[in-house]
Image 1 (cartoon, helix red, strand yellow):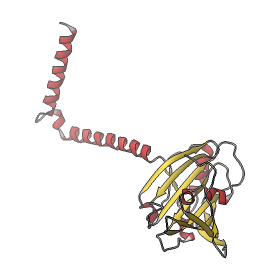
Image 2 (image 1 turned 180 degrees about the horizontal axis):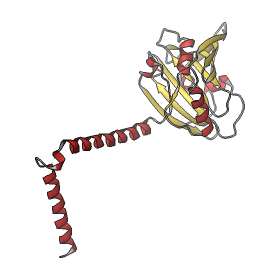
Image 3 (image 1 turned 90 degrees about the vertical axis):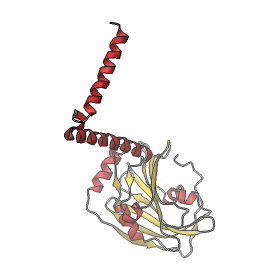
Image 4 (image 1 turned 180 degrees about the vertical axis):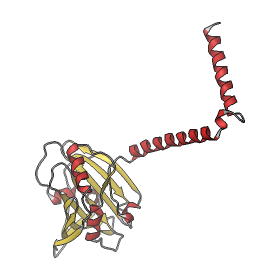
Length: 251
């Protein structure tokens, strides 16, 4: 018998066995087999969905504050040879009248040391870059389980509509990672610094970070007891204009 005839007989035999298995009383109709196959199929579908969601939503950092977390969210990874790797997660829309927030977890390039200029870091944020005008006023020290954050009141003019926000940059005792971003309340309402401190205290990490030092620092601090507070460190008499940065940003 030729190879082609052999393949044809084998294929027909396989089809016949599948038909018999699916027929009433066949093996595929037995409950334990049916449920086993169903469970396996669900696991496969869930696995594919998880891989797809991780690809579409890659940032590991999340805010666990209930009201912020229920806002529509999206994330992306931005990189720069001079600034490092930024995991960016956005909640809501800055140019919308409702609450919004963005958190950026930055892992600097290897060997980059030293403190970070608060105003320069704030100028690089999209909340300032996208605004027609931006001003800063009162400043705060936010205390969290991760360490200190420096924060300031920020007003952004989104095409004739002012939005009150708080911008923040971490002052962690490590050069492996830092966190910055903003939190804006609904138009007409000022954001509460203590609430922001507690939201930052509740930061969570979904997966391993890009470097071992950054991953170890964040997980060590997450394991600490929750603690959050906001302390006013001064208030300007007049809001100061804050021009956007002219330096390249992460992309």
